[in-house]
Image (tube, rainbow, N blue to C red; front, top):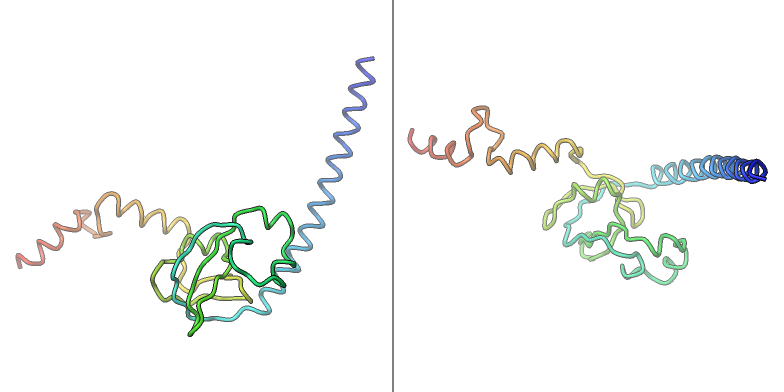
Length: 160
């Protein structure tokens, strides 16, 4: 009796594992095709970042034709959104997660845009570089070679 139940559970687990494997393979091919499409259509644009937030894509104010093309699961998830001024227009753009962290607010930056999707940013720092900058700000140093706090470096300049 117990062996029969264990055998059924083992078969179900094997079938589920195979299903996940093939689904992952299919999703990987689909993602690669999308990345190729984005790479073909991206262009560099200078934008002024007004605001950035993580919100549902349905609250972004995209036209109904665009909202109809968004998958159901994507409508439920919070995505990084950037409100930016591109030329004379103010638009809401969807942003890549890695770019979202590095985008400064209230500054003009050059980004790579594919449609309404921000793919990359010129001069973008990696997560490690951003962490080092935050760490040095917390310590109070200005990345000076002496390692002194920033205000002492300024005071030393005025003494001379």
